[in-house]
Length: 183
Length: 183
DNA sequence: CCTCATCTTGTACGAATGTACAAGTACAAT
DNA sequence: ATTGTACTTGTACATTCGTACAAGATGAGG
Image (cartoon, rainbow over all chains, first blue to last red; front, side, top):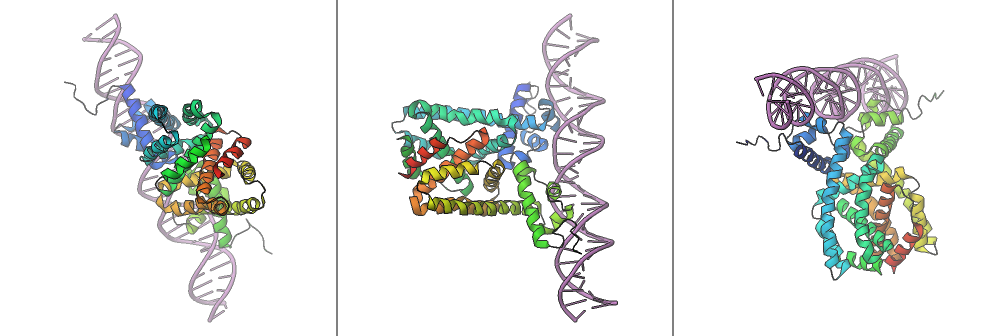
């Protein structure tokens, strides 16, 4: 009768994924440094023992959470690539994409949590590097390597500022700055 | 006979400062989330009880550590203001200052730790805002409000990238980008 | 039916945590 | 000298932590 006790019981892959997703959420709310087995277990609805069964150590669990986050971001960036390729006005489209990206502060926080974690723990650096190089690679064919790097740095800085200030994006100002960097 | 047991005994202000400084160092190494009373006490050479005597709660201690860090950064920015005012070539001087700033990764990490902490805890936002507005205010009279904001965002992004990648600064590239943003 | 490898989970344990606090010290004011 | 206030610190306590693990549940292969 397929009684769904919690769903995904006896489905190891689904459990791994559920734990990674729950870890990602805990990181977004509490930060990497305050992420614990128990918080992840509670968030995922799985028992404590499941966390250590699938991820022997806390570092493994956190790495899985961060990797899960980058996978999600990669999917977002696929849409960025599609829309940017079809956009008549690249700076305007980039601005709009950034505005939409900023709508979910939780996801944005994870990105910077990943950066800080990678800056401190070399084992996480590959995860962060893959993610940080994704957008430049999308932009490079269109605007060249240098402008691509500059644009990404500008966006990262603008996003960081919006994150700290809880302020909205100055869309016209950003578009103008992007235009200057492309020229 | 002024026997200096650890120096700064019976000097409350010096002890507060020592604890704040030690907290700053612990944050730089372990991150805000893994900063503990005991780590700060050990780092400062003061007993555990001193931390809770001067800072009733852990959040107070961390806030003091972050404030101490921004005070130090403010002193650095005074030198930035001086050198930028005297510089014949603003973008080149900004690039050089950034290069020097990146030499001490520990201090850089604290800046971004502060940003993440402020993004999560509204009580820390004033500390972060003061610090984030300092450089724009220095640049604004020279380049205007918009360019000042763009430049700071670009620098923040470049610095973040260097932090994550552990890579060196591309000085000529940065100077060129800055020149474009000022124009 | 049994076997066995895999998965599941509740519980346990030593270590570390934030915080409280009593007992003590030092020193200025009386 | 005595008092009183501010400072100092070692210890204690209840929680929470990471991790280990034994006992059970499940389902595939014989």
